[in-house]
Length: 126
Ligand SMILES: [Zn+2]
Image: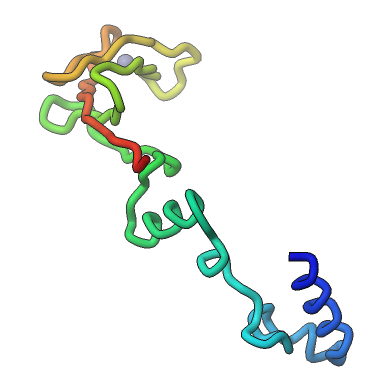
């Protein structure tokens, strides 16, 4: 890694200042250019990047999808077990959260506002 940085910085010093400013990072005078995140990622980071390219979210890193919260369109709550604690902010301006256990099976309702929540099984990639 350090030797690669030294090669890059040495190559940058050889470039005229005007062309260094105009050229994007991938077009430097380094053979093959700089590796992108996708090219140099390994292990878990690589799995996450590959999943994100496919539109998947295996670690629930994105903002949850919005549901109507009705019986026909309940809020889907992924869980790796058969129950999960859920916090419902019943109205937009509420300053308190109603917490309750959501169990696997039929959709349950929030005890305060009545919004529907349904537990769906979720398996972590490893
Ligand atoms: Zn609620």
